[in-house]
Amino acid sequence: MSRTPSAQPDPRAALRSGLPDRYLTPDDIAVLFGVPLETVYHWRKKRIGPPGFRAGRYVRYDPVAVHAWVTQQSELDTAA
Image (cartoon, rainbow, N blue to C red; front, top):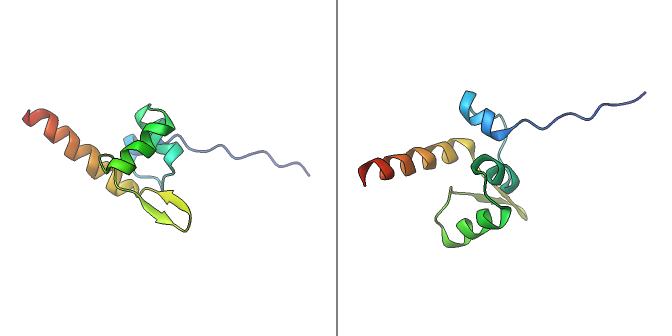
């Protein structure tokens, strides 16, 4: 019996159409914002990007927090 691999949902589409039902990975954040993965880790180190948290040895991002961060960034841009 062959199994077809399940496709990973596109995080950009998920945040446009609603929140995904899973925590996002650094790779998801990189795809979402169209930046290199190294940039995501740099943002985390400098605490200037979306807030993440550790789940064991893994970094994860709550989609609600990412959406709130994007909204906050948008408001900062319009105020400037």
